[in-house]
Image (tube, rainbow over all chains, first blue to last red; front, side, top):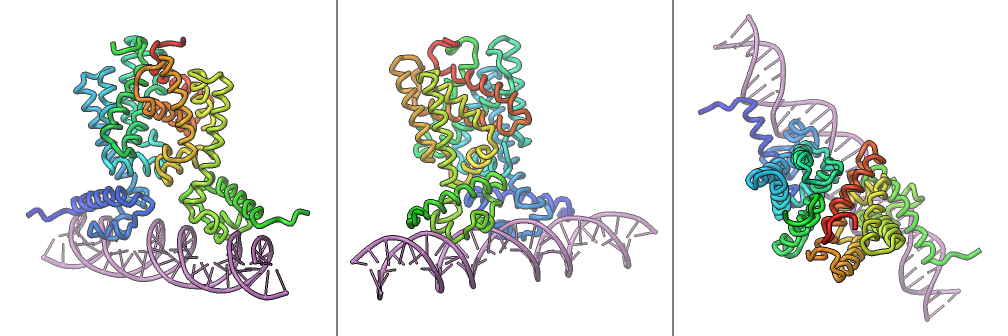
Length: 200
Length: 200
DNA sequence: TCAACTGACATACAGGACGTATGTTAAATT
DNA sequence: AATTTAACATACGTCCTGTATGTCAGTTGA
């Protein structure tokens, strides 16, 4: 019956705290989330929090990284399933937008994250996503499939459109209808990157 | 010597508080701005603040509205100067991006605003800007100049790209260089809206 | 096996911030 | 001129964050 080692227990508390953070930050928002209540809901005290994450922002960073990494992974999977290249890029964008239907993602990643952790471009998780987009655009550029514009700029704008579309869907009163409009508009703008306009 | 009426003095204090808010929010950020220090710097106390703006968020809303309205006005002027239509729309976008070079705008409008006041689309100032974009796109649609995609979605995405570009420029280490890249990428994506690709 | 030590976490404390309730004074009203 | 109103100041209560200290289980070395 596995006498739990110290490192195992510590990993357990980290998991508990991050889970409690996801709940509290999603429900009350980062600013209004009390660390007393949050840690108590995890069966702990603030001592565990400050020992493991340094401060309140440290926990937010951990929570955001976990959620955002999962988002990027899902988007990447969708892109690969679509065969990579341009179609893959569009699939990634669609997936990212669809994920914004989750209220937890809306509040924590799309709203509070940028405010309290700074520009998302500097998050480790977002950087990985951005690098992937840059790589794909680089291939397309080598094939002469896209216009000769700064690749990093394009990647950031494309990600930005997807993020903005996600936010719109998120705050919409009729998310399903808005989702379709947002995806269409996203693909419309994205098509501006292609050398030849249209669907081929 | 104009014995100041009560309404005049009240307007004065509102102006003072908003000015102090712009400074404090820009320097320390909304969360870390103390209302005691802020009001003291304006030669007042928190009493004036809570009487005039209800609460801390009320002051932020007033500050954001003032700044954002000025931004929208500048962008609109640039659009008119460019002759309206598509060229006007592009000029508006460029202006909006260029305005993001101001640190005050970066922090208050682009970062803290969305977090503490919610989605910018619901701000009165942003709504005016959005309505203007929708109107222009509507004209272009009537002329058959742009693709048949939901106008509101397009307008929101276009504004979103400009805002995202602004944020990128804002956090860049070399704003001037980044500015050019961002504007090019913005125009590249925007061109996806036109039925005929390219510069004419 | 046992004693000493390390560290994960709990508890107690200090500082500060927000919002409200109450007081004060100057302007407006009649 | 007396009264009322309201703009603002002052004082208070409550809550939260971060730190400093305490405690005990788990680890280590002989």
